[in-house]
Length: 118
Image (cartoon, rainbow, N blue to C red; front, side):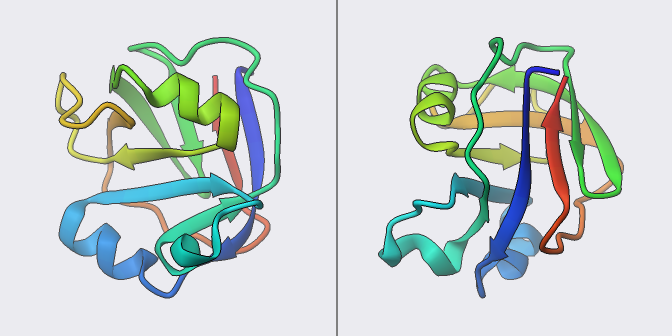
């Protein structure tokens, strides 16, 4: 297990972003106020190893394969539990803070769900 956190809050705009952009922004529980409505907030945790292509991401009730990791994603994940997870399965990140994954659709989130990279 490289990183595991528990969902503590879900912003009002998370579902629309997931539907229109096929992505979700995660941020640890110290998310700045101005971003609260746009993110899935979670507990703090240490990143034990870099997330790399081929790793598995477990989100709520689904699993995904990591297809690309942006240049800044590991830095922001370590510092703030922050990255954008994109469900398109592309083999290159479009933005530096993105982690691209492929799998069966987008997950549903509930407070208490686990987000785990392994």
